[in-house]
Image (cartoon, rainbow, N blue to C red):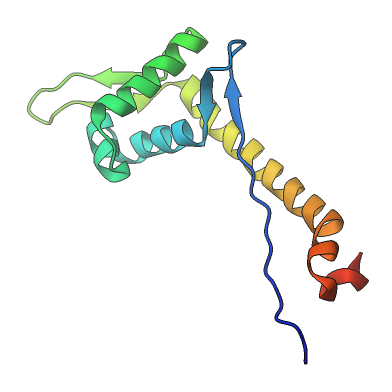
Length: 128
């Protein structure tokens, strides 16, 4: 009888931290900035992400302080309401972190498939 094939995957998490170990940027902030870019405001992004406005603002402020540069341009209210747009720095962080995140995951998957998978799943042993 053939053994049940196991579907193993590797997972990894990357982030950028400062010299004291505090998170400056990672997947959470990536998702926050992406939502603000999509939705046009912190408030709408907070609703989409099911987070509080205060939590999102706190994470953005922490990153801005660490980088010494703003991530958002705030638009004043008025009849149409206010909003926020990403600065060129924030757009660059999204693009570069997204690319880095994809490459790290691809390399981790490749390394796992070549190094660990044959040991965990004997049916894959002849692929090693």
